[in-house]
Structure formats: structure tokens, C-alpha cells
Image 1 (cartoon, helix red, strand yellow):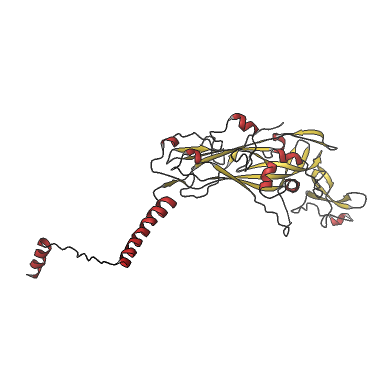
Image 2 (cartoon, one colour):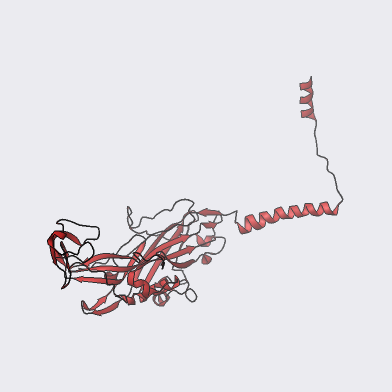
Amino acid sequence: MALCGAFHSFLFEYDTPRIVLIRSRKVGLINRAVQLGILAYVIGWVFLWEKGYQETDSVVSSVTTKVKGVTLTNTSTLGARVWDVADYVIPPQGENTVFVMTNVILTLNQSQGRCPELPDDQTKCEVKNNCIPGYVSTHSSGIQTGECVPYNNSIKTCEVFAWCPVEDDYHIPKPAFLREAENFTLLVKNNIWYRKFNFSKRNILPTINSTYLKNCIYDAQTDPFCPIFRLGKIVEAAGQDFQEMAVEGGVMALQINWDCNLDRAASHCVPKYSFRRLDNKDSAHTVSPGYNFRSKERNLRYTLASIKHSHESWWHQQKGMVKPREEVQDVTRMHNHPAMGQTPGQSQPQPQGCHHCSFHPFYSNTSRE
């Protein structure tokens, strides 16, 4: 019977809550304040500030670069010589980097043979027994033959089988050999694409024409959207001195930051550039400073001090409405660089959910006989 009574009550009875009207200014104001607070949170914070109604997408991008500049040197060893891009961009291609030679230690007319090693505590000798045939250390220029030969009028060193004469890098040219490199220019072309919104953009904006591009140089105040950068200005913007860095080399980063909101017109989506030195100069740590490597050209071998420019393109996640505006529907085809395991024209998708993504440029490959 109890079960039937409960079922009868559930089926045929209806309950309604009792409403109590409280006539109190204090309670009424508290109630309205709570309601306004919730409303302000939803509209002000969730919708207007955090854009909670928007979607985000990861980016597909490419970065290409081109260095330009010519300079003349006139030395007793090389005579008058013109240096262009094929001479001072060594190696001609690099992943996420471009190398610009700024200083050089020349060693002319080298050939494989026997010659005295550079003098130091390990290579100086008085008699033949001081030298070990076949010995080679980490810092050796070659393999010891076991002979003790004159290095100059006052010093004897162990003879080595090596590229002779051996390189002497104790004396670094100051000022830098290519000190005019600060006037060389770097063109950076950056393309981005958000596939979810069918939105593409590049750092050469629609308002830039060919006449402007041929004459502009990036300046944070007067030309903030010019994609051509003077190397000296890049270093200066990072708070460094180009001529000082050029002596022993260094590593610079050029960052491209995109922070776009598709609720606004596409013209508001513009890049912002920043610069920093990666190999921070520290007066307390002076061991192995700068950046350098060795190369050769026919009968000329040399150690290069280079300024390495690393291109980091950073993007905040793209935000926009689920259905983007009509003016951002056009998509531009992009080609990525021929990186490891890729072919030209193959685009490089980025990891899902990345907030800051860096991408790599490719460079013109010009060889000299």
C-alpha cells in the first residue's frame, strides 16, 4: 500500500516552491550586486578580455633570407680584393641561420708536407728525443714525425706532417678584416598560414610597393614594417657594438612576433621585430669567446670570425571567430626551405598547441670556382 501511495503522489501531485518577498534595501542591493558581478565577469573577462568565444590554431610558416653588400679590402697578402655575398656568406646554406664573415686569419699557399709545429709547452723541443713519432693531441696541427726542427732563430719545435705552413691564430686582426660588414643588409621574407581560418599573411605588407622596398631600411620608429635590416643596426638594437663583435664573432637572433586577432581587420595583423645577442658577452667569462670556424679556398685556408644571425619567428596563437571574416579568406601558397628530410615546396606543419614556434630560412646557394 505504501508503494502505491508513493506512486499515486508522484503521478497526481505537483509541488511549487514558495516565494518569499523580503522588503529590505540591504538584501536587495546585495542581490543586485552579486548579479552585476556575475554579468561583469562573463561579459568583461570571459568575452572581452579572454576572448572565450574564440578559437585558436597552430601556424604553418616559412622564412627566407637574402644578404646583400659589397666591400673592398687592400692588404699586403691578398692585394686589392672585392668581397661579395658568395665570398663572405660561408657556408652558403644553414638551418635557421645565416653566417656573415667579419674577420679572417689568412694562411697562404698551404700544402701537405712537413713543417715545424706552433710553439707551446707541448711542442717545444731541444733534441729529437723530445718528439714522439705519430703523436697527435687535441690541439695539434698535424702528426709528429719525431724530428726536432727550428721554428725560428731562437725556438725549436717538433716537426709535424700537416697542411704547411701551419695556421697561427694567436694574433687576431683588429679592427676586423671586413669591418664594413655592418653596412650589409639582410632581407627577411616571412609567410604564415592558419589553415583553420584559411588566413595567410606575410611580413611584406600589402601597403609596401617595390619602390619602397628598394629604398627602405628597418627602423623601429620611422620604418617598423620594412623587412630589410642593416647588420650594424641589428647588433646595435641588441645593445652591442658591431665593430667589437666583428673581431671574434658572435651569435645574434632576429625575432618576428605575430599577435593577431581576426575579430579585427586583417590590416591590424602586423609583425613586430626584436633583436638579441645569444652568446651573451660576460666580462667574467672570457674563455673561448665569439664564433669562428675554418674554411679553405684553393691555395688559401683561413679561420673565420662570423656573426651568426639566427632567425626565430615567434607567433602567439592565432585567435578568431569560428567563421572568419570575408576579407581574410584569401590563402597565399608558401614554400618552406629544403631542410633535413624535406624538399622545396613542402610546407612544415607545427606542433598542435604551441604558443611560440620557431622556423627556419633557406638561402641562395652561389658557388665560386
